[in-house]
Image (cartoon, rainbow, N blue to C red; front, side, top):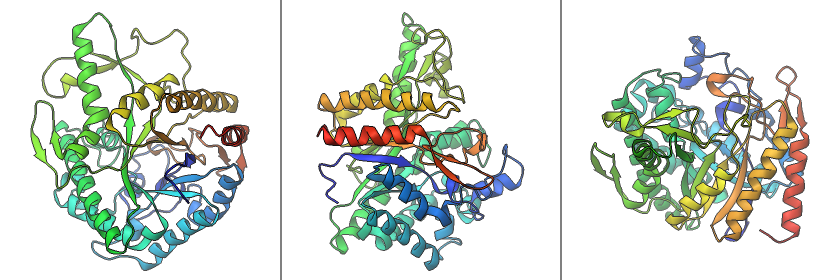
Length: 427
């Protein structure tokens, strides 16, 4: 597929959320100790049913699909690769290719092999070498069938949920460890980027594109007239939204007010992945430590009365995707919306959500912003981490008793948008 001038339409998923029975990772261990609302179990059994699911995606006009490799399957013990599991994922990408669907592969979507986790996970400096080795192996095995690679999914969300809020494994509350995790993940991304491109060049695969999927939000001051609130918004935007990509491109990690680290490479991104769901109002909290980045408030000037929310209480703000695309356009790289979706039991709300967000993506494209793709989260209803199975994000409804798949009207409506806009040659 010629990807240079092709807008990528599709949906996304991650291994632990859909595959089922990922028994060798930290999340399975976390679940087995009763740390979650409900265990993942067989999930959607996508590991065995991926062919069926991809045929549905193809019928909906999708030209791209984002999924993640389950590292714990591929390297169940430190330094030991599973040829069987690598063959499985090779079949996955070739099934997508046969359907003319571009595979977009995430190397790490939160879950860690147990051996890696027990060695300290992302707090251990060896994690940089472990991850780069895994990334190189992925290109060696799958590179001829995969153009788009995402090294990490939402590093700041992972650090916050696992090491500050403590509701994901390992369940700690340490700002120092959270920053250590972020630093090591940026280092790991830069090392992986370099090793992946070197591995590709050795076998004349010069067209691979490597990026990362970043969770981003527009931030607004709780009180527009407050200098403190506006300062907190500025600092939070620079840390949460921009620090990862800026560090990867500049070759230097700069923690505001903390320290500086040099990376192994510069310009370590070929495109940018943005995961967008909602916005936040931010209030000044102080200038000490993590306080300098403010705290969320829920009665900020930007919030409207009776504002629309999803079933998890996240506020719906379609214009936000345009503001973020405009903000990140300054890096001069193609931008793919790697996640954007809504959990709701009202599928009409989902249809409107897709229509409204796509209209702002189209506006960004018309303004010359290099938006290169839109991936709805998610293809299937799936396991939503600490929230279990109750949030329903999917274009395809999953019956968790029978594992029956049913395309929702919103999935058909998105398919109609894809067909209409491609006919109109807007993309």
